[in-house]
Image 1 (cartoon, helix red, strand yellow):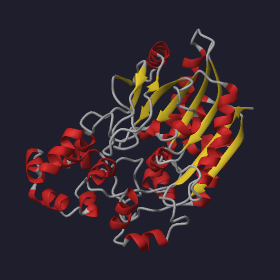
Image 2 (cartoon, chains in turn purple, orange):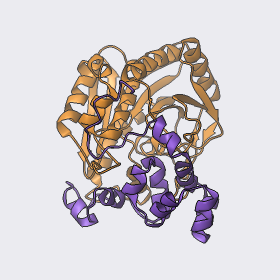
Image 3 (cartoon, chains in turn blue, yellow):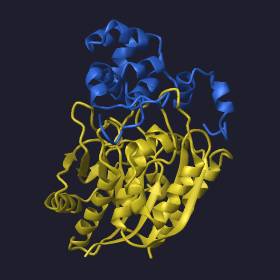
Length: 119
Length: 278
């Protein structure tokens, strides 16, 4: 256990991205990361299934990507910082992704914010 | 001899870049953010620093997790602004100073900070989100940046204390550069926010204020905190505030806070501060 992180075990709704997670979900994260390339985005748009198969995703991971299950992807080991690159391809803003991760509608989530118009 | 004339603390929220590109400077929801940068931009226009050293973090854009550097310093005449999934931004590449970057790399490594160097790689919103609010970019940026990326994404990440020491070593590097350059050190990130998991949207304004006060008066206290402390108090991704401590280390000693703007609109406590040595 990394002593810098000790004591976070009980912190709900937080998934620390460490080398264990990174190692476990390397293929998934690489697939999401590649969305910063225009070619990878075009390939995914043209044939998402082939794109995912070529990236070596498991059936579970493919299903999470198909359903754009953001919290599921985080639990499967995705780093938010590559997930947000895929969110751009899926035409979702980060605020929308936050709402979905929390299990709220976008309006419900924005109602909890101080300046909901700031988007 | 080069000299550090001040420090800037700033958030690097990607949405700031989006709002900037869309021209939302006078939108009532965004104006408090943009207006808050004005005094800092004015100070920079008056002081005319030659270089801004950025302690920032990459967001798995320049580097991927298969080879993720703990500290990485960029070298180049220019740095392209990265496409992060939504296409290129309408900004010129950021400018660099090869000799200055190489001197800092040599000095830091000889000072036992064995960092990575990178060339010919685009840089993401870690630098590019706040930069146009600090410096004009038309017809071109008025000075150069020295990008120093710190891993705050993939644990283990450097301790708060290590970041502070990196800043101290940066100061030795700057002050041993033979040219009479004026340098400002920028620490980016924060303040409180969490962007993943069911806890996304977490903020803690009381802690943010405490952090900003301790930052000036007693930064040693902040260097003693563990990553878990930052994550609990400010949200998981607020741990990136340790990059402010690198800037603080470079300004070691007493400092005065000339400006502070704090705007918590949706999910990140967007903050900009300006410091000068006392």
